[in-house]
Image (tube, rainbow, N blue to C red; front, side, top):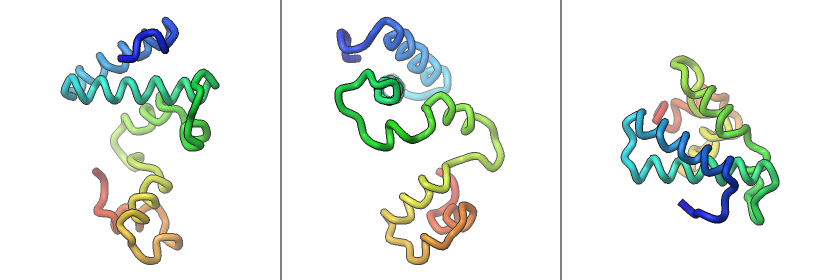
Length: 110
């Protein structure tokens, strides 16, 4: 954890996310990675980071996305996330596909 870079609030957020991930059965390394990424994204969204990607600033917040993904059902990955995976896999016709078609094309949920 990059101490000194984050405010006390971000340190608490990091610990909270890390504990949540450990409770969910993630390894310690994976929990730390997810927590750091979450905090860094929130810092970018709040204008606290020196550098940030466009997606970090414009995508839905990590906490909101987690809430959307926490329930079973039609949630899962967003259409944009499925589209990007389809693009990486070079699936033809992806621009005309809806979310369900993209999910089938890339192999369903991961």
